[in-house]
Amino acid sequence: MSIQLYPLTFYPIYKEKIWGGRKLQELFDRQLPAGLIGESWDVAAHSNGTSVVVDGPLAGKNLGELVSSYGRDLVDVDTFPLLVKLIDAQQDLSVQVHPDDVYVKNHTNERWGKTEWWYVIYADPGAWIIWGLKPGVTKQQFAKAVEAGGEEILACLNKVPVKPGEVYPISAGLVHALGAGVVVAEIQQNSDTTFRIYDWDRLDETGQSRELHVEQALETIDFSPYAIDREYQLARCAQHFHVDVLERPQACMISKKERFEILTCFGGPAEVAWSGGKTVLACGQSCLLPASFDNYVLSAQGVVLRSRTAR
Image (cartoon, rainbow, N blue to C red; front, top):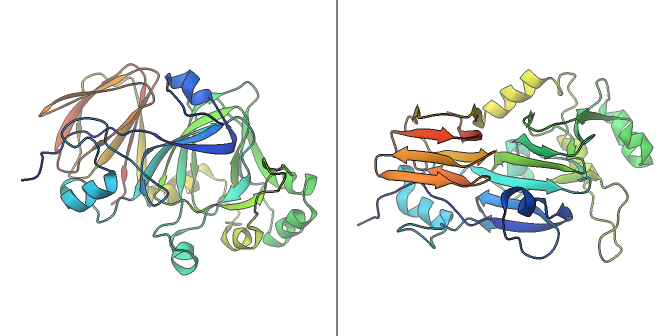
């Protein structure tokens, strides 16, 4: 007999990155492994990282196993479609772009493209992101700029100052990068395909430049004149998932409509009350609510991101 499902919390999967740091430890009192930690995959079922349950009767089971065992009682689709991570950029990330569903099916082993959505948790004074190309930049112009490198590329990029609490939708095809001193929560399709366009001419620990993927990027970039229109980006993201930003919910009754949800809290802990009990989330923690849940009551001192698939 299967164990009854309940809100699932997971051990973080930490990823060392050349541009990472230790900010997740400072912000969320986490015990990080040694090194420059750039990413924490907090809810994931990907070949490059699969979440393991922390506590309860299903402790030690990984998310991929649970999707296979519980099917649509856990997830209302046949394969887990989302990935939730925290990103700590202590140096500039590469200027990059992600492919859409059609491109990955024709050129990679991934099932999905990579549309994503950022919530800014922390930003140093003067911090910025790259969010698209400047209006009017064509494929031909950008190809020439990439070939020239350096300032020619930077002149094509839409640089945006950021502050905590802001939201940036990033659909597949939008050129983007996190600047140094920015920490975000990222909700995205369950994919790990990135095409680097420019890496600030930096070298890795072996003295080598990281691989670029210019040809693939140019095939993938959205050069439409409305690519950096916020409503356009939000609409494209909404084809794949929805994220609500809930400010200080207090005993808020939420109906799930037979789909799984992921809750991620910031600015303080959160409490999820459900028919079988209560689950308390620490600041920065996520939990997965099974599709079989009808409703729950949410209370939090800060912000809760409520993520779910589109259908």
